[in-house]
Image 1 (tube, rainbow, N blue to C red):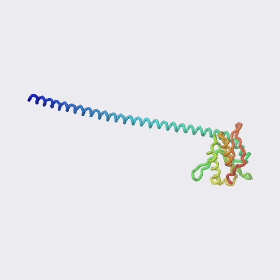
Image 2 (tube, rainbow, N blue to C red):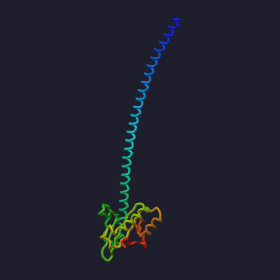
Image 3 (tube, rainbow, N blue to C red):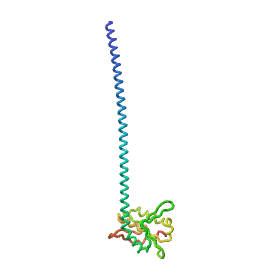
Image 4 (cartoon, one colour):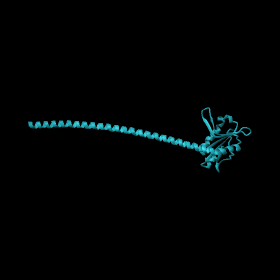
Amino acid sequence: MATDFEEIKTILKNLAVSQQETDKKFQATEKLLKESSLETERLMKESSLETDKRFQETERIIKEQNKELNRRIGDLGDKFGYFTEGMALPTMELILETRFKVDTITPRFKKKLPNGKQLEYDVFGYCNGTVNNAVVVEIKSKLKYDHITEMVGELQEFKTNFPEYASKHLFGILVAVDVPSKDLIDHVKAKGLYFARIANDIFAMEENLAATDFNR
């Protein structure tokens, strides 16, 4: 019986030792898992930061490229606008001189108002004396309804913004190279403006019996 008891004690002792070793291995494994988890988290954070940096750099490059593209498009639009104005100007000068008896013509006429706003017209001409006319010319590459509304609004405010010309008969001519539809031309005339477009390599103005004197 004593032998059996000693054997049981030995088995229990061995089990206790084995359990301690198991606990140690488990703790070591748990430590390794924690370290591995921390390392994985660190790597993920570094990867995320690197991804964010690359994304921000890509976004910056795209913004700079878009900015440059918009600048080039703007420059191209300006150049085409200047080209259109250059094409129209000689004919417009002739029309102003012969049809409206204008003797003073200023391309790119500008005035800065007291409120800081700056007004600019592609061409402005006027004359003094018996014939007392003033004419504003706006030249567009492609005609849009907004151009008509904008020009009419400016002419309606002309007397307020230019009191020195308030006594003159004021007329407006809208010039365009590309006109998407005839309805646009009809709308120009219905609003009291003259209309001119290119034909046979020169700009020709169409008569408008409904043309408005915007200073009256």
